[in-house]
Length: 376
Image (cartoon, rainbow, N blue to C red; front, top):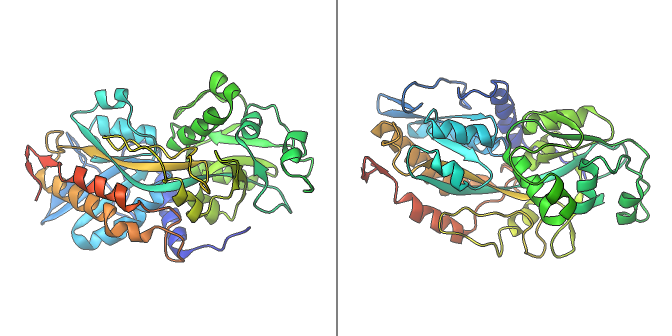
């Protein structure tokens, strides 16, 4: 079905598109329009008792952080965030060009090894990665499973009337329109989540392409960031692309019902996105994955998104004021900020944290220090 635009989404997506236009550098722009990043060990700054905290990374999470920035500006924290992709965000944190990174995949050992000190990853929300399509006269709900999506992205299924698609959708009149495959061209957490799902459900994809923030695509057209993929799908009849749900809603996209691990074909609603957090394993470093969740009713391509920061940001080069601002931001993100997420008309379309995971986040937050001392 088609969705009405939600004011909160429209504002946040507009801000995300503005920051995306800034390119892939670590310079940041806040939702309020102020920008700038410092030099030296940390990009943050302080003035007159206020803190500026700079971050970069996940475009999936960009609407969340840019929306939260407007609230934090009244609490003495100027929050700047540049949606440049998870890979670039982690790289910027490793050089302490930014004070925090947004990343959809959990940190790998190789990521941690390049940091300037111990880093903490905080799950902050869950976002559905939709399989969106541009087919005139066809509503949301075309049924697709992992192997079929994989064959589309390997160039083996070339039209929407292919027998493989028709067999999943008996009785549906599908056009013979050619399929134009659209994928991310940048280092992307959304790509990591999408390809992880394909690897989990199709052995041929796992062995030939695999999963990561960047892969060697067998076919298709590349576009940068969620916004770029969304634009390409919107402009191309017959196109298919994987985009985070907020971008799909903003563009009034139609999208597939995807087969989950229990055999159900599920649409990416907030309820089904929330269900993906049920039954997942939570490791000590909170590096969870909600892709292909075992839970009944779960949409299978749900990505967690993390806020990554140094356990001791001051030892990585931040001032005590920036460390204080960073902790205020995290306290808001893991507390009141969760109420801005959900299915309400004034909420952003992401699933908030379950209480058990929020509690683990807050336990971890209490371990953050500035030069070994508690952050005030």
